[in-house]
Length: 493
Image (tube, rainbow, N blue to C red; front, side, top):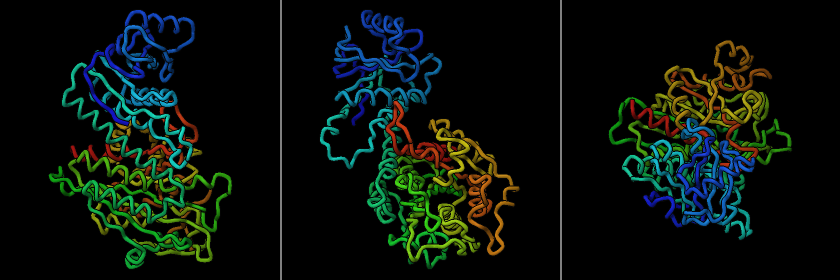
């Protein structure tokens, strides 16, 4: 789908559909001819259309416009029109019109469009175009697409053009992540993820290092290798690095670390069969850091950024890790594996240590589909945020607000360490029934080595169980936008 900025007046735009944003007071953007405006007012008065956010109504052959159809999208009160809502409205319009085989869709803003709204519109439109049906063979599905989205503004300023381009970069990176997460596990193995990393590095000029199994063994990544030992698929640790020409602070190295379990059976502590097919998305953290690097390479923040993706399969075999095994991590700490289904924290532990000790990371943020406990606590609305540094916390929350992604801070009190005691090793990999999301985060904190570090538990938000008016059911691509906004913020320090 191609997006274009134009300056053609709304009434003259040749398109299959023109989108009008309608507010509670019946006013619209763009302002519509009297006859069409009265039709909308009549529909509202009759209860046929409510201009609350994301409600839509299709008008055929709207008088006074060159467009064949008019899609009216509700937006609520004028004061509610923020980038978060604009992103959703643009997405809802695209998803409403795609099944109608409308090839050209136009948005028009006769009162101008600020930079935040321009970015959000471009981002929302592209995100809404994503579908999960790539492997279906029904050719009729391919007919339901939009070729071009036109966005009309009174003047195309450099600022608006840059914001519009940024929105497209962000959405393309997020959709890349969603495509990775959506792939079935027979097509998305650790080596396949490494191939994608190679393609990203080649296309965007990033430094790449892929640590294969012999190198991981030589280093002493016993936690990561222990998880991988039950699978015929070889593990790897992907390291992508972006270095700016002129860093704002050469001493800062931001590390984005993502859990890359390409399929998770639970190992010997096997998961229930019901729903296990969704465990292809257990690599959503790794996919998000790879996607973020695509956008970072193009937006060029003035800060050094690395992505680390430890990639494994967690399988059941005659060589699989057993409950009760004790592994030695790259840090030197030993871990008693009480439950082989708590594998994500094990591979992240070695990745965090590698980022700090071998690559000089000064600030670390990891993302992982880590615990069911965080879903019980926060549902599918917020991801869990655990952070050991107030300045980093504020930076992440500010980045998330700009990105329009939801995080909720959960505790990291040292008292929770009482749940993480083993008589045979330095740490167990689980802390028992209570506070499961917190004890998982406390386990990871033990490998942050007092660096500013945050953990994003995205288990409840990386996959949409139900589609939304503006997004397809399936992988969400969270937290790609937050990662990118965080990197940009670090570059402005």
